[in-house]
Length: 475
Image 1 (tube, rainbow, N blue to C red):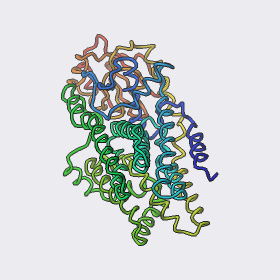
Image 2 (tube, one colour):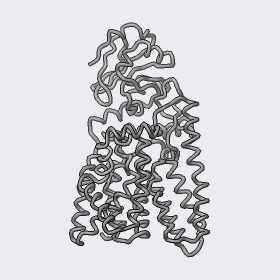
Image 3 (cartoon, rainbow, N blue to C red):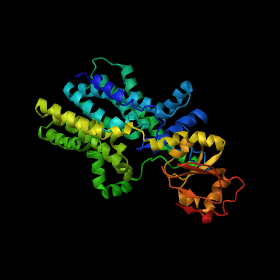
């Protein structure tokens, strides 16, 4: 039980619970289904990773700017072998994120010591990492690749000989991680700390050169190609950052929520308190290494917060790139206690965090209707038929319907001009979500093709949308 691999494997097994579930859990189903849309479209429409495509483009193609779809493309590659299924991304992310935990342990052991590495890794495992490492989202996936890169950098600089393959591995993992999620580079902001270890000048120069080259595809994707996709295809969905001054204004108006995301979100209340205590201890004990790590990565976190604005405090997963640093500081803080009490503190913090996330492994039965939605649509429509769904801004219903089209509000579907416009671009059916992701809407002028407790499907065939829509009523 003192071997960290035992705990990583144990938590890997725990998170296999419900691993084959479709992305329909209560939290972040919308973010997962947008990712699975892209993966499925690689499999069914166009396999070029430079043109990621979602299903809710409406009259547009659905090609959109987003982070480089490496995780989505791995799902596509799995699908080539086994046929498409929703859950491949869960398993891929869990495997990579578990490897990331082990490399985090090895990294901290190299930089500090084994006890601190053990406690830090266990805390990271039980942090917000616990639930997001099994979601079809690139956050822990990308951070894991960056941690693996960081470890290879450390070994490259500390080695007595020049290991070119290790340097190339570090650069490759850096490039893949940064392209998968740009804020994931936050841990690498601590790299200047290694300069104080007085590495060989040739190796340090080689590291800077190779990483500069590896940064070029990242810069091209985020600052050139994504702008091109937006201009060429007119889709705006994935958040790509905002003006720093606007972000600062939004953060200043919600300082409390922002601080909650930083201090409470990763390890809950006891862990957040331990983070503050650990920071104070590091300052009092003048632990320069930890203070440099916290300072350098803290600057990076502030940049992410200012570029994100309200998106940072609205979404709990934006803090994930900084969580390894929080786990390290918390581990240092509790290590200052007597040995017995440090174990007690470690157990309590981990238990509080996991128990507050364990619900995410379950699937509410009320959501099971969405799994049957594609079969319902296949009985009443053709795969190429465009539909509109009253689930805006959540695209999950459209994903499970396995159709392309529009996600709308009820109010949009009651606007004669808007409905006529969509029909002009191929709209044939309207799918009403009565409960989840939408509210019931009655359109008495249209033919009902199907109805149950969760859905109602209307046909627009041979109907003039301007007749009778104005008399429709909201329920």
